[in-house]
Amino acid sequence: MIGILTKNFALYHDIITVMRRRAIPFISLTFNMEIPSNVDIIITSCGEGRKINFAKIMECCENDIELFIDKVLLYQMNGRKITFGIDPGKNIGVALFSDGKPIRSFVLSSPETVADYIMKFMDVVDVDKTVVKIGNGARLVRNRIINLLVNSPVKIEMIDESVIAGMEDDESAAILIAMADGREVKNIMPVKAKDGEIKEMQRLSRIRSGNITISRGLAKNVLEGKMNLDEAIEKQRKNQE
Image 1 (cartoon, rainbow, N blue to C red):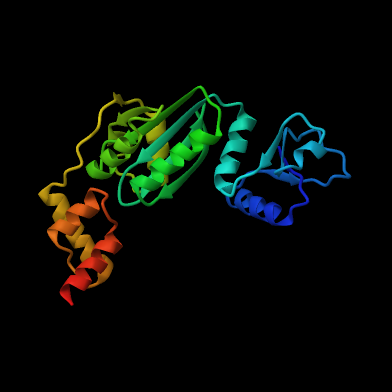
Image 2 (image 1 turned 45 degrees about the vertical axis):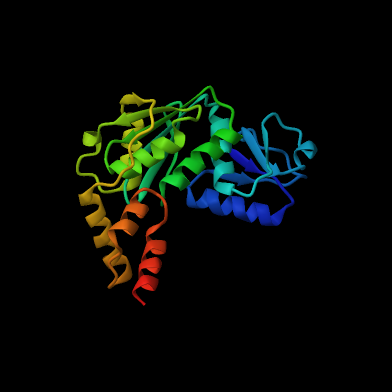
C-alpha cells in the first residue's frame, strides 16, 4: 500500500487526483498518526522526507506527477527491467511494464512526445535494462520514433502487428505489443513519405480543416515530422488568401 504524507496541500491534491484516476490504492497519513503495517512506501513533498521515520520514502521534487507516480510504482515493485510497448499510428498507444508487470498504459500524440517520455523516464529511474517494443505498422510514425531513440541506451525491437490483428484500442494494442517478442533494430530507418501516405495526409487535412487540402509538399513535411498537421493547414490557408 502507498501512503501519502505531506503538509503540502497542493501537491497532495495533485497526487491523489492522478492516483484515483489510475485506480492506484493509497492511504492518506498525518504526521501525528502511527503508520499502518500495510504501508510499504510513503510519498511526501521535496524536503519533508527527513521528518518521516520509514524505510521507503519518495519525495516528489518534479512537476510531472504522472511520471513521478510511475517512478513510485517501479520503486514499490523493485523493478529492474522496463519494457515500453508502442502501437504507432494517428494516436500512439504506449504501455509501460516493469519486469513483466503492467504499470500503466496511455496515448500520446506524436513520435516526439513518445521519445520525450521515454527519455525523461530513463533520466529519473535506476534500472538495469530498458526495452522499447514497437509495432511494425504506421511506417513513418514507427520509423520516426525509432530514429529518435536508436542512439539512446535502449534496446529496440520491432513487433509483427499480427499480435494485435483486429484490435482498435491503442492502449490494449500497446500492451500486447509489450508482451510479444520481435527482432532487434539498431539502425536509422527511412522517413521519406510515399505517394499513398501523402494522399492520405491530404485527406486528413480536409477532414481536420473542413475544406482545406494541404499541398503535397506540406503533407510530406507533416509525415516526416517537420511540422504538425494544424501548422500545415494554417500555412495552406495563408497561401490561399
